[in-house]
Amino acid sequence: MGTGAFDVDASAMARRTGTKWSRFGPEVLPAWIAEMDFAVAPVIREALAAQVASSDLGYPPDSNRTGLPERFAARAADRWGWDVDPGRVHLVPNVMTAIHHAIEAFTAPGEGVIVTTPVYPPFLSVVPHAGRQPVWVPLVDGRLDLDGVADALAAGARLLLLCHPHNPTGHVLDEAELATLAHLVAEHEAWVVSDEIHAELTLAPARHRPFATLGPDVAARTVTVTGASKAFNLAGLRCAVTVTGTDEAHTRFGHVAEPTLDTVGALGITATLAAWTPEGDTWLAACLEHLVAQRDHLAHRLADDLPILRWRPPEATYLAWLDCRGLGFAGEPAEQLLAEARVALTPGRDFGPPGAGFARLNFATSRALLDELLDRLRRAHPPIAVSRARRV
Ligand SMILES: Cc1ncc(COP(=O)(O)O)c(C=O)c1O
Image (cartoon, rainbow, N blue to C red; front, top):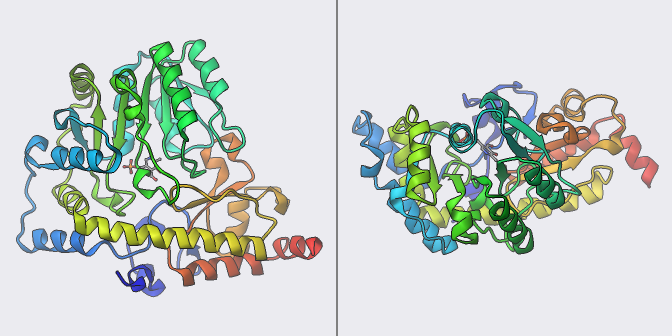
C-alpha cells in the first residue's frame, strides 16, 4: 500500500459533514474527536458501494445469521489466541450503549462501579445514568492505581470499568498489571467491563492481551466490548460486538440489552465483515505503520519545538495526552489554543478532574497536516513561544 493512502486533502475534509471537520469551521485544524482522516480501506469502500448500488438497504438478518459472530471469533483466535464462542457474541450498535447495559445487567442499583480517570468522557456519565455509584480511582503517573482498585473492591465496588487500551493515555496494561487485576477481580468476585475498542490500534512493539484471556474465572466475569469502528474508522456506521464468558452471562446481558440488540445497521455489518478480512488487515497494517511514524514524528517535533508540553508517547491509539500545565494558562488549555492557534484539541477536563491542565491531540492525519498543526501551536503566542525562549 503506497504512503498516498494516508495523505489527506484538507479542502476535501472541510466539505465532510462529520462532526470532526464541521464543528469549528474552516479556519480551525481539528485534532479532537477520536477518528482518523484517512480514506477508508478499499475493501470496505467497495463492499459498501456494492450494497448501495444494489439498493440492498432493508433490515439486516438476525445477528446470528450475519456471519459476524463467527468472523469475530476467528479473528480473536488468530490475533490473540482468544477462544471466543460465537454463540456468546451479541451485536450492538455502539460501545457505550453496550457498556450501559452491561452495568445494568451485572450490578444492582446504587452499587459501586470503578472508573479510572482521566478516561474517555462518556465513562464519567454512564455510571450515574445507569443508576450506579461511580467510585473514582485516578490513574497514578499515567498507569492504573492497582492499590486504589484493590481498596475500592474491598470497600464493596462490584464492577471495574476498564478502558483497555486506555483513552486518553494510550497506556497498554502489561502482564503484571493484568495479572494483578485478574487476581483482584477473582478474589472479590467482581465484574469487569473491558472496553477494547482501541485494541487493534496497539502500536508496535506493544501488544494487546484481551482481559478475558486471563483465565476461565476472569472470562466468566468479563464482558468485552469491541468492534471495527476505531481501527477501521467506521464510527458513524454503528456496529459493535460484545463477548461474554458463560451462557448465563450471555443471557443476562441479552435480556437487559434486548431493546438494542439487532438494531445494528445493515451497512455497519457489511463494513465490519469487509474490515475483518485479509484485505482489511493489509490496510490496517499499513495504517498502523503510518500511525507509529506519526507518533515518533510528534515526539521529535514536541522535543524540538514545544518542549514545554510534556507527554508520554502512547503505546496504543492515535491520541497524545499532552500535559499543558507548563504553559501557565489560567483556563482550559484546549480553549486557549483554539483561540490562539486555531487548533481544536479535546479539553483535558472532559476526561475527569485529573485531566485539568491537559489536552488530547489526535495525530491520525497526514504528516503535512500534523506539521501544520504543530507549526500553528509553535507560532501561537503568548505564551508557548515565550516559554520556549525562556528555556533556551
Ligand atoms: C474508549 C472508547 N470507548 C468507546 C468509544 C465510543 O464508541 P461508540 O461510538 O461505539 O460508543 C470511544 C470513542 O472514541 C472510545 O475511545
